[in-house]
Image (tube, rainbow, N blue to C red; front, top):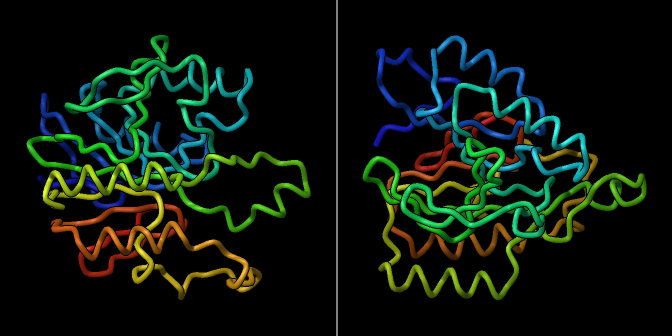
Length: 240
């Protein structure tokens, strides 16, 4: 399967369905609108957002207005969970549905905005794609001090991690692709870390756990967002 990242996409042929990848959008979809226009996308095409789509951030009418706008985009959004957004299972308007052969969360009013579930393996164009969303917010304390949104559900809880490990054991720890928000510990782009952040205060348990998964997993490539830049590191690609 050939994923196309936002920065590398080629114009598609008429009638061809494409799967695209991009990093965090944080509720700003101007570049996605331009992208759809340039590439003549339709709702049969799928854009995978690697966390922090920003669609469930304010949890009020502002989110609803954004969803109404995104409903008109000529593309389907497949969103991985980030750290600066609420999980759809904690929002009463979301219902379970099937997409890419596994369970997802969707609001019936907005069928082209789909949220993946952490630990699920989705079959995308005959490729097995493992989704592992969530991350720690390094600006957590600043957000709490300023009264900005912070979500207690930002990381995968330990009980869910255990379930995912059990599921992967049954699957033989073998997939084609991994789609996550943050990355395994050894792949962290430390050269991009903010100097203003004391790294001793950062909770890296998610990255440590992802490293545990990566060490056992057989996969072709791992895609992640979170760090707001583009970077390739062997079998890992960071997108923004």
